Length: 137
Image 1: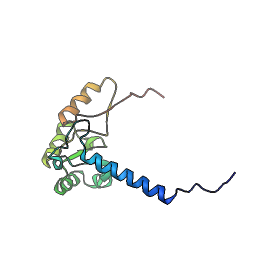
Image 2 (image 1 turned 30 degrees about the vertical axis):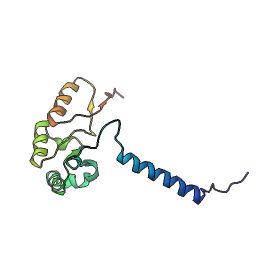
Image 3 (image 1 turned 180 degrees about the vertical axis):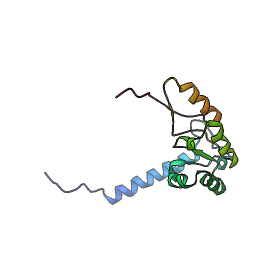
Image 4 (image 1 turned 120 degrees about the vertical axis):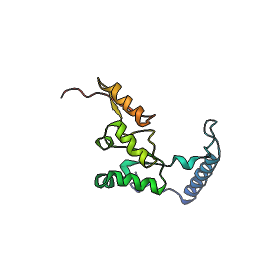
């Protein structure tokens, strides 16, 4: 039995890259499940705020302002919303013209779930996950 590493033949690699590239080009021009590409797609350029977490720790409001100035329109927080109440966080986003349709900081199941989801709705969140409540131990 040979212990030599498996080699991917160059010709097979180039063929696979050509097929994948053609598929990618086709998929970019084809509607997805009958949907067309939104002609206003530039209005939906967003950023997961975890990407700039170190900057947020230094200057949360200033970082959001810089992202908006760079052209970002949507953000997805991955933190507890700068420890602000939902209406205050929404005001912070509104100040810079930012929207938030989803969050990486989901709600937690339990007696407080309804209040959390109401806060999410107030902030404009349409998509989230609900984490199971952790038990003791």
